[in-house]
Image (cartoon, rainbow, N blue to C red):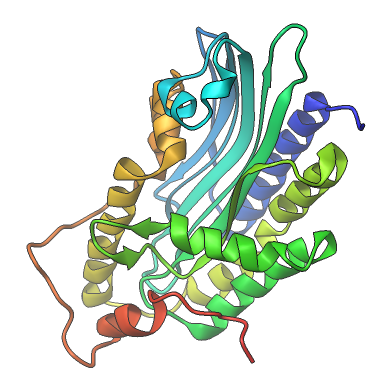
Length: 303
């Protein structure tokens, strides 16, 4: 059996964070803030944040490595067999909210978890994925994003992409609204079925594929003309993003319950958001097209 190597995972995660931040700074022209923090219960992290950039209105690319003697309640509910084990979790998580309403919001996360107890085999897994949340849908953008996701998983089994795509559709679904958060991507958790080396290689492929998946879209859309109508609709749809992250997202709950840094956990919140009572888009409008053509689950790579 291959040796589990958290140190190698940590080194790669830090490098991934640095590469993504550098690429985004090259596009935006403004530097990301660097904020190093420590967690009293064990561990810490590096938050990289941009606010009021030239292209990115608000975004964060965060690394965290936290540990503890017992798991928080959100994790124990899903894995009660891990009671009494020490644990560590590390990952890179990012959310980018561009200024331009035609440039979609994006989320990506890759993470590693291990729980240990004396005299017992360690329990470990990887999780992660990426998903795209447009305000004005574009079929070319959606197909490109999903194609990169499929290409990242292809070397590790033909079944992974359809599984992880379906998992993403199911996970990033706003149940109280009965609508998807965006056009999806891939999502997976508790993944160790390929053994450590191949599972780790798969996660690396996903994380390393993020810039290929998103940067071409951002480059195409960042200078597209827009007006107040588009900004207003963007702010309204950002409200859905807030609702999902605060009501349904497991990562947000785990971070808050495990004593993570609140500023880093809530960096996913968009800077300008609006809510309206029982609002519906005008029939036949570009805004309605998001609901009719893009939010319903579909196979974006179908011929």
